[in-house]
Image (cartoon, rainbow, N blue to C red; front, side):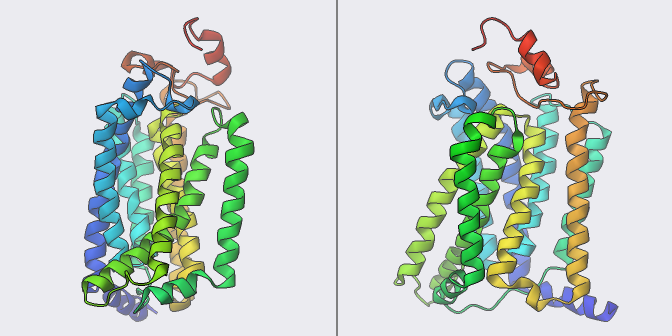
Length: 350
């Protein structure tokens, strides 16, 4: 069995997989930093206009937000390229690095406290991601975007896509209006669900571009443009609701929770569509699941760190909401329970 795992590891480190790893790591660095820059831009815009968390779009006029947006785009381009070379199960978990970068920068720049258990949570996220990477399956050999389309239109993935869209629409039209400002999982749920579909389409486009650059033109197929339309729609939806989550809740909490949900759903979608686990033995699959448990443990520690850091560890339920017109001096109130925040809110708050 040890020999089998070693052989799987050697086979997995092909030239393409190494390229995918490097691109994915670069992507995480840019994306992790972009969370902080965008958050600063959202706060600055919210101080003089309508906050994104309550439906405002004043951040579109804030240069700092655009710097963060450009940084994220660079990271997403690197991520896009990574999917063209390596399987989603290998690329997606490397987003754990963005958690560490985002949490560390939030601690330094935004003064969102990251204590010893938060650091341990970051370590656990990396350990879990590394475990998954070491046992990732071989990339499926695909010679045309038509093959990807056939995989995407199989009954199992069509059912998954329909279920995801149904849940997303329910969250957007029925849950967000009532619970979006108080429950962090609502905004992140929409981002993660839609994101799992966008990654599958991004991978299809990445394969199409890779084949086109190698001499087999895939731009002549309507399926390529159909995947492009899905990517644009999903990315715009993700951007909108991620902005709302960042403007409403603590960055150090949004990043890891979004990472875990997005990664879990993306790998599930990849397993259904590309049948990644069909090329793995039970030991590898179980090890990958252990990696996910490790990541979830790290995320839980990061979440609880906010409770402990503000001296309210004995409180059962805390709100991670940011003040409506927050600036750097207002961040001290982030850990105050929701009911206490309401009673302490200044008259100028809407």
